[in-house]
Length: 564
Image (cartoon, rainbow, N blue to C red; front, side, top):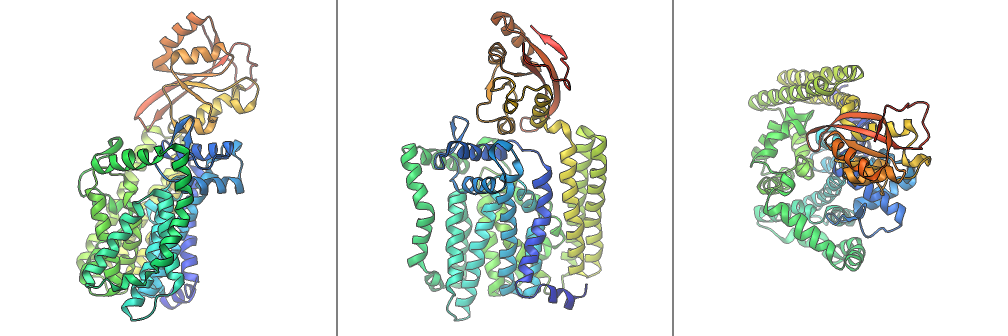
């Protein structure tokens, strides 16, 4: 496709829409193919399902445990998605992931829309395509938690702010719809993840004001009605949760969760200063080849108002995330819109030799890293079916990295990017298929499958529930089997069998389980064994599923032995 042809296809609203479509294509395979993930995704999904079951849309809980770490926004969005597309009893994780997929599309659309004003239609579309197909955002698009939606909200707010900033710099009056987008994105970001959005937005505004030596532009944001809009979005729930929990939510969310992450490496999620920079070539793939050019553009063209805005969006927030003791791969995602814009800005001029060479090397490195991870997973947990998916992943990742690097070195930067995106998105889709076929990692689905074959799954209604399970107390199993699932020890599993309920016993608990059975006089029969790897704890697990004595034997699952 020639450049005039590309410009014709992305003119007007078509550019942002096409960028959103690319984000949809990139994120959809993960949404459809991956089983419920541990631990955060399944915790979010289970808490949402309990909202729908109980009708309590204020107090967030996982089983009987209060989940007062994040605001309610993502739970409401997931509940709406499940209500519109599925049913709670279906335990369909894809329905809970829909808000994240929609968020990735919104983020890509917003960046393409803002980029059109900052850099022109072509560069705007390319920025949206870069963001929407980035490995980090397209992965988060298929996971039912907060991060993709936070990225969307912050990106919308910053897109509106960019339009306001450029208008004031040009001596024009900012448009009210742009102000509305800014305040709407900011308010929703608070409802999604508390003050994290402010950590990106506020430093950007301060940095711009200091750099320009002008704070007057901020007076044009519409504070008089913008702050009430934020209060209207956040206030009703904030009041309701304060009353419902007697202030407990704020003590947990601010004092414990947020405070713990600021003062130390919460939940052992630590990292070294500069960790995000080291990870960035992988997380920005397949657009990694433009990362050095983006940094060069930010430095050499910083006098341009549009580029200055991007730098002020990226640098202060990035430094804050690097300085925080608690580090997770996705924390810098709200800054990826700025990176995408800088990459697109780099494409508006010839890219220097040094940036091209370093970018080509980083692209090949990121591609080889994806290939290595795929080979490792296939070697350790792979099946014959996974080999096909893995081969596609490796081939497409290699072409995205090596092919894109070769074309970039030939000075065809836009063509290099488009080739990398095309093969990178395919590699990401095949990677999701590969992960689905690594059956030992899907412990919870395998346990449910074993129970269903034996006719003892709680939702089948053939025997009483709930199921009791030892050691493997992961949220994915609770999500698939319901709120009442009993996370217990060997004695609790023996008691479940005595009460006519199914039990699942991990191998390390087997001896204690037999002793507890002897003491209670209960008995049961083993109907299946699941061997797998609990990636949350890093442990291999062997779990035996027991049916109580008297439970009807399923023809498809003959008894494998007695426990007495």
